[in-house]
Length: 434
Ligand SMILES: Cc1ncc(COP(=O)(O)O)c(C=O)c1O
Image 1 (spheres, rainbow, N blue to C red):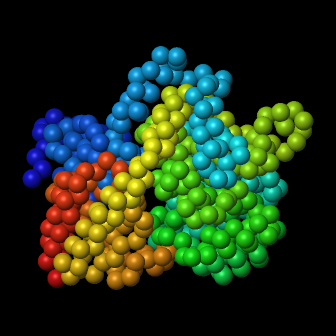
Image 2: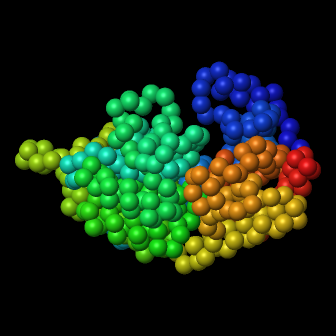
Image 3: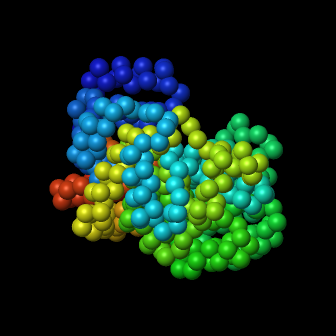
């Protein structure tokens, strides 16, 4: 039973007064909004001291748990040498080396402060390389908050016919609306046809190799790779979630498909602001400022906090943890067990639901068949999703709005308590909707 102190209630009220965003708004029960007190490992506590098993994990970064000792150690020592300098530093160099060592497509790297920045700069590089403007993305994919990314993402309701895009927010200039083309994820024939028809306008194709929690059908990523290679159109993998989560080589390592550019960073960020862009040398080097002096096509992509030493040192420390034998095996095992608990609870409750995803990131859908793209996911009952999250939270289990993020440090007890919560929540939901 969650109890909230007056102190926490006052903080939440003040946060709502101060910030238009940032409170947990996707709930039917405003009493469930909370203010974080602290987090450690796989657990998070609100200011009133209520404890939750955390499958939100800061929206994904804490694959090795909150406040990991390696992260805290880097944060204790590195800032003594200054927290940002704009000029390059040894921590950024080490991180660049690690990225190139592990990510198959990485020949050069640039370090930024968010995933949104990394995808934004990837698309700009593609435009300069191709001397064309349009970007193809997939319906329902999320690539961050930049104007090009905020088209036909997972919050799209009414979908215009392919390849037309629908803006997901007001404020995107009309002139940009037709600069983004939309294809259906997991439909290679339709995608190849759109790419082929628009090849003379396309600058690049951006894709989440696992879109949200939809796994690519066998041959889909390979097919997209082939058609983009044929037309020399840069293929950008958005591995902001999958990078270092699915393994040291991310989704490209797992599926054996190498893109031209890759945006990544969450899993090695330790929760600090980090976005990594990497890829083919001939494309990445378009960002070299010498080109401006040589009057060559140039993509400017820097910022006050780019290559930040504190963020880079945390990322190096986390990659060294990921390199230790057994880390990914444990992550996979935890994910399979939590997912099995969810599947068993679905069966026991008799509720119509399915699960999509991979062991370390998956989602429950309230429809019979697990969706494979944005349009098939619309069959899911949104009311039940939100209510299920609320019921879980009341039982001390916090999930992300769209998925369960798994960490390697969820304990056996966490898994057992989570399975129990799944059963109680789904039985309750089944009764409510009967
Ligand atoms: C696949 C993907 N791309 C890009 C982003 C944007 O990253 P950021 O929130 O760091 O801007 C996210 C964030 O969740 C993401 O999931």
